[in-house]
Length: 69
Image 1 (tube, rainbow, N blue to C red):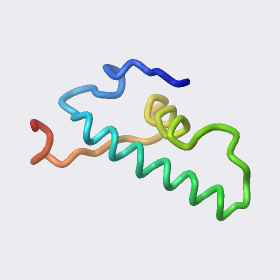
Image 2 (cartoon, one colour):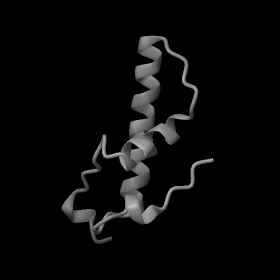
Image 3 (cartoon, rainbow, N blue to C red):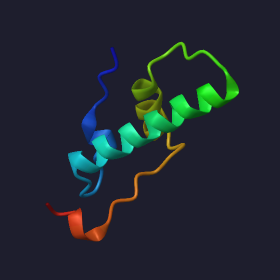
Image 4 (tube, rainbow, N blue to C red):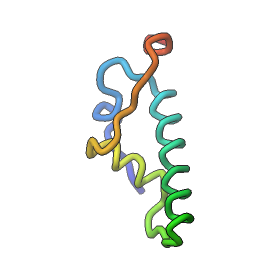
């Protein structure tokens, strides 16, 4: 089970809501890409999405109006 340090992902003033929403969206994209390419995923899509955010492959862009909620 993946248990990353959230401080690494929640840098600046990013909310947990933004992290969860972005992770779910990226996980769905990963599943869609795997289905389109007819590949079998060996890891869970959420795990892959979080790893991609941690590695800097994808960046979460948070709207200014929800940044300080």
